[in-house]
Length: 343
Picture 1: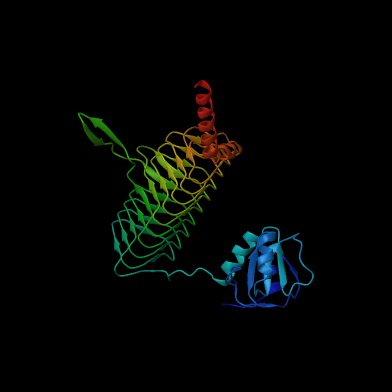
Picture 2: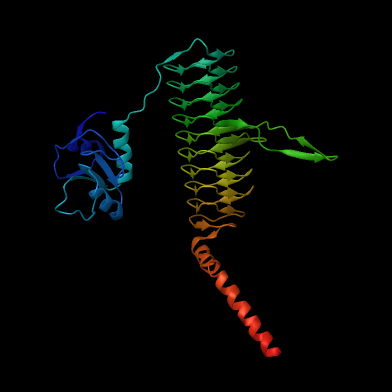
């Protein structure tokens, strides 16, 4: 791992040094595992107190924090320390990708267009009329179907599947095992038998999207399933047919979104949130873990529970819920008292 002086790190992230600007930093770690003399991260006062007890030589923390004058370490200050830490981590552990080139085991269909500096690693399969932009990286055992388009600088990690006619933007990251463009779940019952509704639409993933491991994004019945630019999708997420996900949304692990739902921009769905079909979730809405969205939600609110209700209302429900054993006991006592009086 490279070594940088603290002042050099400050220059990279546009931060401020408090302490020794020439302190050499050769390692970065969390509070629990930072090596002696390394740099660690503390976003709030509680974590800062813990970091001060660690062997760290420097602490990256928020500008304006109350810093002890007798600390045995230096400080690197930034208005957004979490973002700054991301830049530092990338500096010490830069992404490495395979060299450009097409491995001999690659199987390629007819009329494919391959951009400059593309890397196709072992056992990649391309269908017919596939178009890959410049500097695309495709890791082993990926399948890219007929007429798929992939934009510049996109990375497809091992065992990704892009089914026919899917369109992927620039700088997209698709993690191992993800499937984009599988059939939507559509059937119609006739004479007691479920008949498949052909799924003839596609999936469009815009620029700067990240798709987690084993996530599935289904193609539309007709038209498009669309993921807006800058959206980040965690592992094991299901996005059904004809869903529209806006820009810069966050979909955390095990989220399930039913068909034809619309998420506006900057929506956050925490882990295991389920969203009913044909629902619109407004811009900037946050739904807490294991929430169930069964109706339209207006922009800007924070919701919790199943069915999802405003967070403050949910807290009041929880407060009463935890009192249920006591309330049941009191009701039983009142019933017995009334029974004795009647006797």
